[in-house]
Image (cartoon, rainbow, N blue to C red; front, side, top):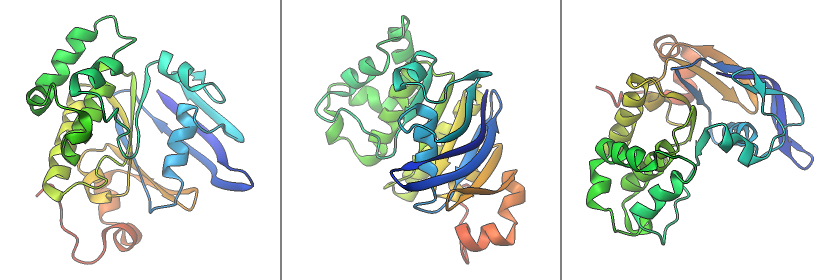
Length: 238
């Protein structure tokens, strides 16, 4: 569904991503892990059209989307849940979901399904988004994206700022998306959480993809354990 070849992008004179190549098959959840500043968000922004690539290609279902405006990706059902959630904080949960589905002719049905998936949001229906807890805000951000009926869902650091129990709850929702056949490209600093839901994982270090593999393989890779798991790491899925 998504294929990136030799992607280079950056800001001003600074190149952040150096010739990255990766792919996401339909129905997969593919992860991209890396430390802060590795270029993960920049790569997502290039896919979405927020950051024009300097070189390389980005294809969605075989059609080039590189250097296209953001609305072009949205029109092709490419949906991003950005880092920090970026909700309309003064608007209610209801209005955030309505905004998410403004292009979806079956918006009411999509909202009903999102509320079934996130029943807590039904309880907060008339509450301003900015007054929700961090975990509830992340659920709303994902629900708002799902109301748009994405062909490809991009998730940027969904665990950021969440307590461990809430991280587990959010990632259980992401695992459910795979069971429902939603295609997801997940960018995450919390490697252990990502390993629990992904089919394959890429490792990005200072703008270069240095490794790819199945989560079970990377989990036992000494370099991955040293750089991203540390001594005595705790499996959040146990």
